Image (cartoon, rainbow, N blue to C red; front, side, top):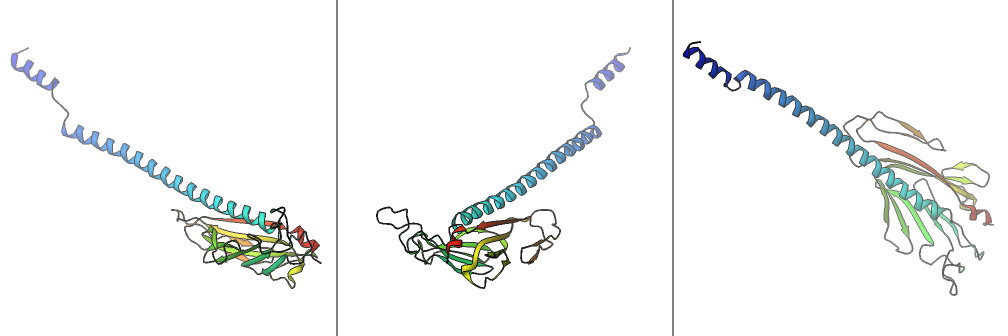
Length: 229
């Protein structure tokens, strides 16, 4: 082989990538990077949605635990002073008293009054929040649940009927709570409308928007009200 041909072959063997090969490599790299970014964005959105749903569920769970614990003691009147019971019972506001503390010898026992701290409780739905007010902090309502779309209190009477407005507060034997809450942030998916119905046939239809929602209900028996004569 001549010296010229041998040198040409050596230059060909030691040459770098051509422009076309570089462009193909860059294009493939961009495709891989785009796929990775796409997967990351999808996982990030999914994680964000899961966090929002978990937060709303925790938000509702905490509120229901508080309400159940306190409302079930409505009308508690161990001394038969006839002071404890319901004061307000509407679809969006509930106020009641209970005699559960204040005894001089035994502070955690009833004393025949309903003026001790946390013996007068009010729950009210206002401005997309569920508020709790206690005579322990009069005039200082505390939000126990937010991002609430709708809330309704229904009342179980002594004869078993369920009404939105009791004809007589002393007839209340139980409270049904309905709450429709939404996530704090919108999702990327459009949510189809869903209709929920309460015991007194109140229909709640969610709007066609991007917020995920949760509907919860609980029935709280007020056993102490059976002794209200």
